Length: 381
Ligand SMILES: Cc1ncc(COP(=O)(O)O)c(C=O)c1O
Image (tube, rainbow, N blue to C red):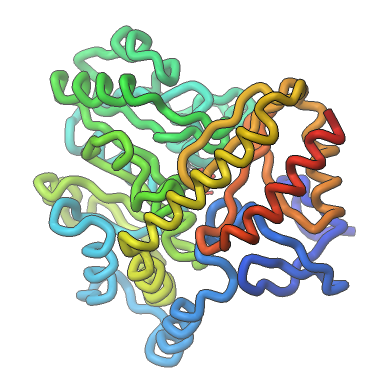
């Protein structure tokens, strides 16, 4: 018998025991090209030596101190994230980062309501789950945290209709990741930022999946030319060591006064050593390469799949790409065939194949994976 809950519906047939470069290896030493990055986490792959060295050095030096003392490494990582424009605090996961953002919004404004978007995803703990307007995520867990209202993504009128004098914040992803790799459109984000400013409402961007280089910019909101009041991070921030973070504009630094929020393990030395290595790698030249590879992958898929009868749409930004199928039932078969052929992909939403290859994947490696995807999608179609 298994001694674990079955909450993940795991693939019990494969166990990965080794990672190298952008490949994973199972117990029989079969090699898999990874187009998942551990769901947007191992963005710098499995052989990111700067991270490994930083962690090993830190382990020998000191693993944990409580957040009651000055931490130079937290200061350094926070500066690498937000420069002088933002201040932050560290937690251990995406959902915890969003909990902190929700608390921040209520504390700052003294108002209870937060507008989020249908089909979005913000996490599994009560606040973040209540922010997640998806029945399948919330089902069975009532009563939820009150105060959340759900608007239609990319529909500014639906947001206007929900604004009240009690609205503290609007919270959203720039690309709905779990919801099916659905990018926001520019007109919507411009109007949303303006609406928030005019009504003194905080704009919170959840960058848990899109942040730290995934879209070819450090943060996805940079594509939309906005500066959110608050943003959250996790996943790709430290290439696999649990970490999360919430950042707010420096002008709001006093909102989280002593005693208002905390996390025992938040910003621990191992996570910070790892995050520092990751952030140091995010140079403009590296991000440009990611953008170029993303464009290459997108163009390749457009060229080879767009006319296929089973394809509804291909969309995404940078190396976050979704292939929407007309028939969602094809997805398990496509995933299985690709796995048999040594390629790992993800599903998102109901009917979308989600590709999140490590940002360090070469164009040649990308092309090998894309070729396999095109072949299998055509076969199944
Ligand atoms: C946009 C977004 N927010 C929050 C979360 C929750 O993060 P975590 O699983 O680390 O709690 C996720 C996870 O998929 C996510 O994609």
